[in-house]
Length: 620
Ligand SMILES: O=C(O)CCCC[C@@H]1SC[C@@H]2NC(=O)N[C@@H]21
Ligand code: NA
Image 1 (cartoon, rainbow, N blue to C red):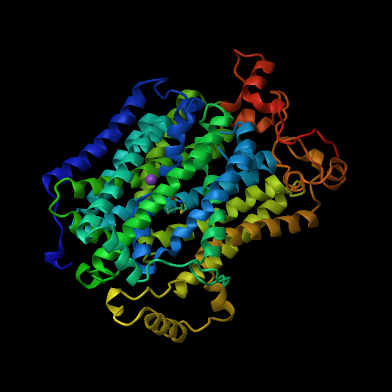
Image 2 (cartoon, protein in one colour):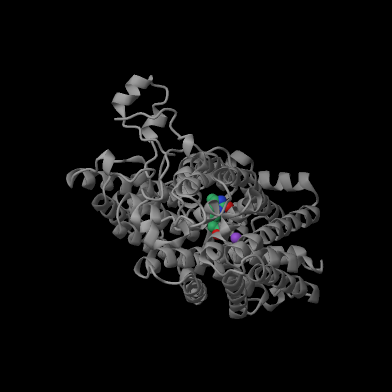
């Protein structure tokens, strides 16, 4: 690191950063000492199922908007142009399907861990495998989220690396352990506001320093960073409308449809309608978050014109370069560098706390409670807190490992979601949309999906076939536009010779991993299910299958639909007696409360049960 490039902080910057940590701690403490004082798992893990849609929706954003996106997206736009912005098209179906398919099924089953669904639909073994897969994914992802801000800061400001990692990890572990899901959701709300403010500040200052909006626009056009709609159908092309707009839908479904962190938030909503509304409210904020980080990348490009400072920075990572540019732009404006640091760590804290809390929940609900049904609430809550602390320490250990996974943190995060989240999404789709699937098929499908995912994922890392040549910096634009494009195209053709065979397999765009792995699980799952004897409609636990065929064929006349597909009513009531036994033993949460009659309980549990999703009760 060239010392002259070292950026230093004013006192005001440290103060702002300290205020952020203190405010998060304060919110955590408040929720630890108010309400039910976090004495039951119902409150600690599910926020008493009392949350309204606004805080839930902001918390849903914060869960998967970490420093990885704050740093990684501008680095992506700076290096490759605005093609990545097309992922915004995936947010439409990526949120509509969770709102109208996954939430109704999961909410009405009154789960606390999303993996309970797998036991109700398949078997305990499938549930355990789903839970362990989720834990594996989340621990790695958390490591990346802790390491990214600390590593980037250290590269640019000499900010004590492990001091920052430790400060983040400890503060986060403390307020999550003390305040439970309520604290996590309300700190997420506060941290999301800080996140947006920090990005906005960088954009405003950057535009002003570059000479205004028109100057920025001229420079980014000259640097051909404004990508046109790329409809190239080649699945090995890293970023096209198809890989981002369609492949991205499966990425969104794996996160906003079945990921424990998000499902736990849907389930913490006071009614199903509030949960669906919170999912709808995610859309505008997610588009805003995407726009802010993309514009930040463009402003940086206009300001630094594609220069590559990696030699002075001492690291080739484009992510560290983003932090350097921001520090350089905000230098001499006391408080603003601190605001950006607060933005980075807010993004990191809100994601890590969600991950902690979801890990503690699934470990309690899926791995511990089923074996200790008589455990008292007090011990269960204490154990949940111990788990949150131990996961915190584990993720600090994972932090370094993820740094070895590749240069762009955004690409590493999206690969993790694709490789591990994709198969889990496939498992839920297999269960919800294919009544014939049985647990043998589910296990075989998950195994095959993960095996294939890691084969492709690791193959692409080992053969480095996923990195695409960055666009030329500004300087190259001395020739006319089309001449540059021609040279660039020639370069690409010469250098990136068409890969063949296994190499082509490894160069599948990582944005297709979620879809590819999801379909693998479904395909293998169905084949094995049919080979080992498909499940019969009446054997499937009521309420665990979504009448997909019935909905897709809704244009057909009733009598045809009756013949074609057995359409089971989704929303029908599971009375306390009917509810599957494992729910009683596995989590006290779903157990009917003594103070309500079973009918009252049922009406309360399933208020909308009398209006099943399917228009008509039809029988096979
Ligand atoms: O920021 C992160 O921690 C992960 C990278 C982004 C994850 C995905 S990308 C699509 C969706 N939109 C978001 O803002 N996050 C998720
Ligand atoms: Na976050």
